[in-house]
Length: 190
Image (cartoon, rainbow, N blue to C red; front, side, top):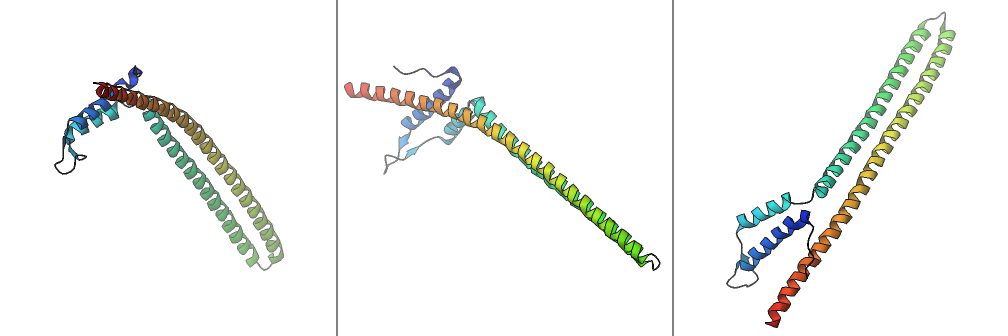
């Protein structure tokens, strides 16, 4: 006795049966019995129906993957932008410090004082630059970790859904094969 398919997959199996019927009723080639002529429009129509009858879980899994890819791209872009902004600010601070140091050192009467102040300003600018780059790197790392966690969670959910779909598909294949075997055995017994 053939196992009944769940109602959400019944349409899928009936469409597959229609394709088998088209194949079995198709005329074979003159020279090669394995080659057959099939109506392209009939088969394409059934394939379109089959595609629209696929379970929503599979469609949802595809959307989850697309969303995870988009979020990962956004996180990487945000991290790159943060690092770029930090570098630009650090370069500006260094440039301003160097300009100030150049100005102060050009004054003869305060050359030593200017040189000392310039050194302090440059050291301070370098420290601020290093601090800003460190913060930007930490923020970029946090964004990447968040994106990785989201992707991992999405992929785990997708894997679970795919395992369920595979089990359902294997059950369907076994059911169809059992029906084919029963038809074959009935045909042999006649």
